Image (cartoon, rainbow, N blue to C red; front, side, top):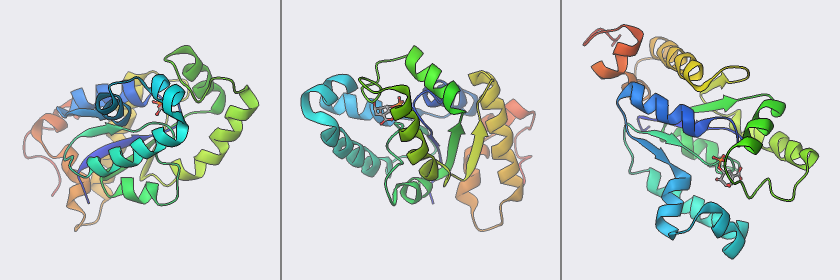
Length: 201
Ligand code: S3P
C-alpha cells in the first residue's frame, strides 16, 4: 500500500482547500487530479467537457489514476467523480489512506455553486445534482476515514483530519506501516505537538 493521503468527496466538499492546507501542515506535496489533466491537455476542465465531452474527461481521469501509482508521500485531491466507478475506491485505497470529506448535501451544493466553474453543475437542477450525490455516496463511503466538514472551515477540517490520522496511527495493527508513514516524519508530527522520534512504532 502507498503512503499518500488521498481525498475524495463531492464537488464543494473542500478537497482543494483542505488538501493544500493539509499538505502544508504535513510538509508534503499537494497533487490534484484535475490539475494533472488540465496540464496534460493544455485546456481547462470546462473546455475539455465542452470540446470533447464527459466520456473523454473520464478517460483522462483513468489515465491520471494510473499515474498516481508513481506518487509517494503526497496529499492527493481527486475530482468529485473519479472514485465513483466500481473498483475505484479500492484502487485509491492502494495509494495510501483514503479520506472522504463528507458534507450535508445542502452544504456542499451551496459551496460548489459559489466557487469554480463546474461543468457537472451546468444545466442541471438541484434535484438532479442531489440524485448524483446520492449515487456517489456509496463510493465515497468506502474510504478508510470520513471527516464531516459541515459547518466548519478548512482549517478546522484539517485539524480534525490530523486527529483522525493520528487515531488511525495508534489503532493500526503492525504490518500496515505504509498507512502510517505520512505522519512519521518529524515535521508531520509537530502540528500536534509531537517531536522527532516520538511517534508510536
Ligand atoms: C467533477 C468534479 C470536478 C471535476 C470535474 C468533474 C465531478 O472536481 O473533476 O468538473 O464529476 O464531480 P471537483 O470535485 O474538485 O469540483
